[in-house]
Amino acid sequence: CRTCNDWCHCKCLSPPLETRPMKWRCPPCRAINAVAKDEKPLFEGEHSDWCYVCDDGGDLVCCDYCEKSFHLNCHIPALSDIPKGNWKCCECAAVEYKRKMKCGECEACRREDCGECLHCKDKPKFGGPGRMKQTCILRNCPYKRFAPPASQTPKPMSKKEMQRKFEEASSSITRKRKRNDSPPQHPVTTPKPFKKARNGAETAPATVGAQQTPRPQAMKTPRRSPQDIQSLVKVEESDDFDRNGNTIKTEEIPLPTPTPKKKRGRPRKYPRVEDNVEMNNGKSAPESLPTACKSDSLKKKGPTKKEDIIGSKMKSIINKALKQSSDSKIQDKACENIRKLVNSAQDAEKVIRLGGLKMIANAMRSHPSVTLVLAEANCTLSELLWKNPKCISAIINEGILPLLIESMQHHGTHLKVQQMACGFWRSMSYDFQEHMTIYRFNGVQAVVDSMKRNPTKFEILKEGCFFIQNIVCNPEVSRDTVNMIVANGIIPIVVDAVASFPTKNDFIEAACGALTNLAIDENARSAI
Image 1 (cartoon, one colour):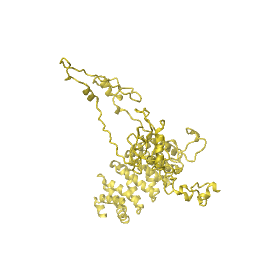
Image 2 (cartoon, helix red, strand yellow):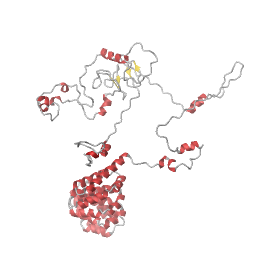
Image 3 (cartoon, helix red, strand yellow):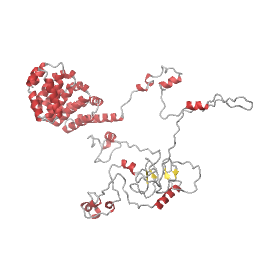
Image 4 (cartoon, one colour):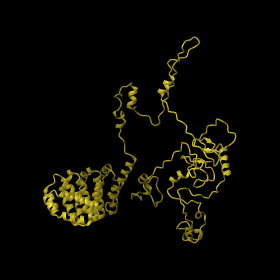
């Protein structure tokens, strides 16, 4: 797979492949990269009475997906005939095109190949091998657009010819664009120029060139509820009298009970709580129903499709790395792919559950001299800890912290290894409860030694300053820890680096925070 570098036999795929493809994606990657193309709904409102291009009236053709209207000559590209079926205008169709196309109307598009440029000499019709597959240099269109190219430029139609086109379209009863199949209330004697509206009705517009007044919008009457209709129909007494002088009493007119609409989908196995209350005349649901069916909020939701795809992808990466532990490139790529897939605390837990920490530990043990593997492994551990701080217990149980210390000692001056390792200790130091674990594995001494070995690399010094700041901020920090930091000469290193890198704002912020918290101690303050 060219996305995740996974391997599959051609016969193991479904359906199996007969030949090995050049560019291929596995099914999980294709599912992730698939983009759902929702079709644009048809326009249901009133179309405009004016052309979208020239802002004039007359015989217009209406788009089926928006409110815009166009003259046949004004549309881009110009229309030689009235379109049939559901038609998209140039504005609606431009969204679907991913690359610009030639206009087909300019002088460069309509000219022939010169036969002398480099691209023409490569074409087979001029005796070339046909490898470049490029258009003639003189035929490069300067007016490319997000619209289909015009195969031939239609001649501009006159007003009489356009009127004839619309009369022919109005006289054809079985045209495809007509959506209202109901017969007309009044017979049509002679065909008239029409303007196609979205609802299928035919309206006769004004003559070409005449000014048109906007149509008044119809007032919408508010919908009445069944209670309002019942109160209007119900008549208690009337003031009418018959011939004998007796009052006439009208009876209540019963309204037909509305039939409930049948809901789509699969019927419920158990009714809802609200339905049970109505069925039992206000009483609660019977005890025989399961408690899980009494409330929709108690139902457990299964994993979404995206989560299942990410989990399956993690599993395939981890299993492949564990099987080929001797290949350093596969280990490096596996750690990088796992790090990119971790975007939340749930993803970090999923990596631990699928054996990701075991994969990282095996990579660090099998390749202690490959700096790329160690740097990527340290970075992946930092990412897991940033997303979910509860992962530290699993990292300790897997025995990764001694491997981390060993990588810092063997590659003391390597920028990426030291930076990622110090970043891991920094992410761990934000939780004061884990400071005892840092002391137990000599994490403070490891970070201080890394800063001493790399006094001119501000990336390592920045991570170390943030780490020292978090350690000193702990109210339970011991005086021996502060004395050890001061005795190793960290304060002069930090001050010199601040003077050397005045434009590195992140590093200056970390250095000032570390010096400020160290200044609480008397010995550190005197050294500063």
